[in-house]
Length: 288
Ligand SMILES: [Zn+2]
Image (cartoon, rainbow, N blue to C red; front, side, top):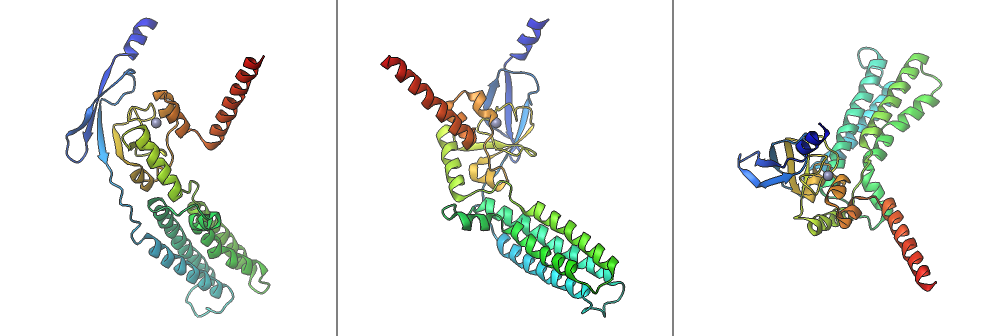
């Protein structure tokens, strides 16, 4: 029984790559050794990098300006300057905070996309941080002043103040949470990743609709059962938000270079230390 299942698992399988646009087979059929959970036909979506962030940055900046305008309007409603608006002041206060939030969230997404299409240089660390995390910084600018001014106000009625502050704090958390770039990339990261993908393969990388990383090996265990594969160069992967290489590809190929590429800097440092220690041991043995 065990023998049969193991034989079954190792049956070679042809995995066909079919271009989603042309319907034609795009790569030679690939033989894999594990027949379980393998997609027999794979639709390949070829993705071309644009390399151009287009109007994302100017639109993001315009939206941030809009966010600040809504923040000021919220404050003017709160302190009674805009008392002529019809209806309850609290409704207007919440409405302006929500409009502020919408501007901040959309601007943050556009800014992050622009940074993945056209990454800023890492040469100046401060400048790189400011450019990478501008969305998060401006989210704070769009809500922290209004929160502080509402908290320090002594004249407004208690309920408007309480609900206004709660709404603005929630908006701050959502705005910053969606605008922080948790995986910021630099122009140097992109150049290095491109070099590695060319050095280790054809320069083509693969990713799936919901995966967070790109793969150097189209038969990687992490994507072997995916029927839809996106393929392109590293820049196309970065533009699609896949800015890190997969770690499984390394184990499958058995390539040290690939392992080195996929491992984190910490792991790299670890491996180097161990290698150094081993060399020292060997040298000590020889000396003895
Ligand atoms: Zn992989």
